[in-house]
Length: 232
Image (cartoon, rainbow, N blue to C red; front, side, top):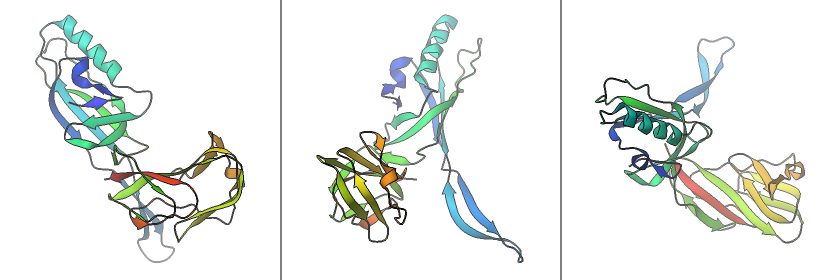
């Protein structure tokens, strides 16, 4: 059964799932118009969002019961933030989404099977591994998947450290100093903080942030790399 924000849809109401449709990721090409020649130059492809449509039925002739079930389902389909959605046919992956459309039920046709919830994946449109992997900096590792992983570098410093660098062999991040405490460098968001307080002010301007990528790689420095593999 479909689980959203840790709650099974079946535990909320006696629903009969008619269909689940998960769209592919929408793509937006980034192009540069040519000054003289016709056409444009392709620069890169940007990944957009994706949608999840759940159609279902509430087979109950009682209007009162159906209304109560719909109210409970409406509370289940959260609209305040993106939450994890899990499916029985993908036991090791999840999507992260928010409800953007709720059903418009008929009062008379209690047998209708086209009630619909629509969820959108915005911040993270990829299938994401439930299991987080970790490896010590300086150790070679292999990231599977066909989309950039979610990746962080974590470290606990008992004292402040100066002139700290992390490199994947192509890009190097250097910080003039890192305060004592629990450090998290988020490579996807390109942020660095200790105890939730940013120390990006210590980031050297000549540095280049390491970009999360798939394949065999080594990130040097001091700390632990934590990552979740992702797929389109």
